[in-house]
Every structure is written in structure tokens, then in C-alpha cells.
Length: 223
Ligand SMILES: *Cc1c(COP(=O)(O)O)cnc(C)c1O
Image (tube, rainbow, N blue to C red):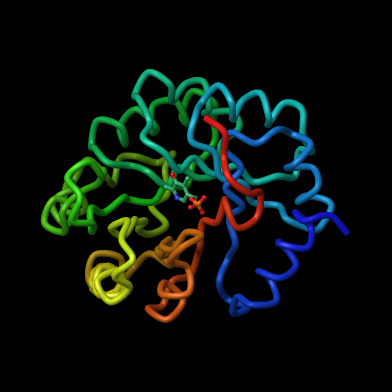
């Protein structure tokens, strides 16, 4: 067995059954993704539009492609036919563009709202208040081609795992609050995407439902 299939197998054995594994395959060649696919992996995460489109065209059609990186508005039209979920919605403008392009392709695109939980300024995402304001916006009801399925967040890149846990804990609280209030009539709001290679164990402890793991599956990325 190769490393990639062994890594997938180990992760699946370790993760609770109700935690979904997104294999973050950005910068890795299609052969690597095919190996993970052969091990049963069907959800892959990419962070560049062109790369995602190229891979989607050459790999099996039953793969679910998730976009996880910063997304420019003008790139949405490129990924719209292929994308299953956009996890990195960080502005209302982007949300509107996804609605527009999903409508053009007569499909529904699932999205997560990215929440800024890290102490690092450079990270993207809404504050809790901004997120609540968006959800109160009446325009949202008219967006029939997007489905808001939950929240995504990235913790601070630090070895202080106590801080990481606190950040995940805060995100989980926001998720539960929104689920009970804003989304009480929407059964689709079920995904809390948090945890990467170095902090997925902390995320599991804090109630994640979806982890995004790259390095621990495919090895280091070459930029
Ligand atoms: C690259 C990336 C990951 C995966 O990171 P690893 O440390 O390689 O597991 C997860 N989430 C997002 C948003 C990313 O950009």
C-alpha cells in the first residue's frame, strides 16, 4: 500500500464516523488524488479555480469538489459547473455572485460562511456580528441557487493548542446559536468545518463535523 492510501485509511480509522474528511489536494498532481480516490475518498478540497477545473475535468465525475481558499468574485463563473461546495464565503458580494452563477448553470451550490476566529489579521472571514447581519438580510430568501450549510473557520497557526481549542470552542458556540435561531427552519445548516493537519484532533474534541486535511495525507506541498 502506498503512503497516500495508508494515510487515508489511518485517518478514517481515527476520525469519529460522523466527521467528514475533506482531502485537501491543492498543489498535488492528479495521480495523488487518484490514489486517494482508489482508497474510497470522494471529497477533495482545492484553493485555486484553474487547478480545480483542470482536475475536475480529468478525474472521476463522482468526486465532490470543495473550494476552501480565498475566492475572487471573477473566478466564480469558472468553477460554478464543477463545484459542490464553497467553504470560503467571506463577503456578501461573493455570495451574490455565487447565486448568479449557480442560476446560470441551473444548479444549487452549497456554501459555508467563513468566520474569522484566528488572532492573525491576515486570515479571512466574517466576524460573528457580520455573519448574523448577513443572515438577517432579506435578500437571502431570494437566493434560490445557494444553500447555506454551515460555518468554516481556521484557528491561529500556533503550537499553543489551548488557544486553538478556545477558538474552535467559540466557533462551535456560534454554530449552535445560529442553528437554533437563524436556521431553526432549515435542516440544511449542519456543517461545522474546522480542523487541518496540525489541529484536527483539537477540532474533533470541540465538535467539528468536517475536517480539511492536506499535508497529513499527501505530504508537504511544493509551491
Ligand atoms: C491548505 C488548507 C488546508 C489544509 O492544510 P494542511 O495543513 O495541509 O492540512 C485546510 N484548510 C484550508 C482553508 C486550507 O487553505
